[in-house]
Amino acid sequence: MNLLQEFQTEGYSIRSYREGELQVGETRYSRSLLLAPDQLDPAWGPDHPQALQRSHFEQILALQPEIVLLGSGTHRFLFTTPEQQRWLQLFPGMEIMETGAACRTYNLLRGEGRRVVAGLIIQLHPDPPRLHL
Image (cartoon, rainbow, N blue to C red; front, top):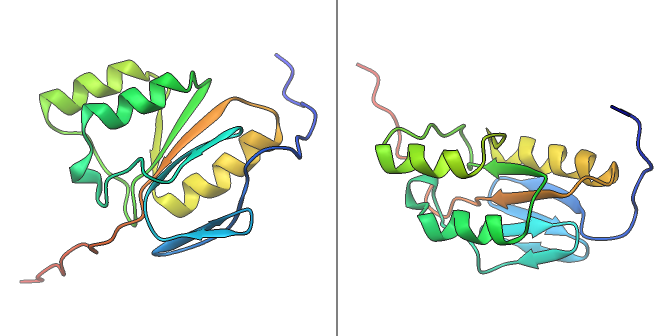
């Protein structure tokens, strides 16, 4: 397997990310979106990882990804319900990470010319504060 591939400059890349906002090209987004090297869907997503539905994963699948990244907001999300576990079977190689890490990984893989699709969750409702007892 060739680990070195040509660097790709065409297509969508993420210019910046901070909690609550990311910039693709010259446009800033404050909502979750679905991103592939040749497509961007700003109406894709849920505002929190617990709001993910099967339809969100079907939209990812329709883009025929080689690699799937799920940016789960400010924390890594674990799929715990049986239904969520079935969604994971659609993408055995899906990587789940916080959204900032998913943005960096997306740019790296896209730059290598890989068919990477990223579902990037921008949390509109931050996690509730945790009580420390």
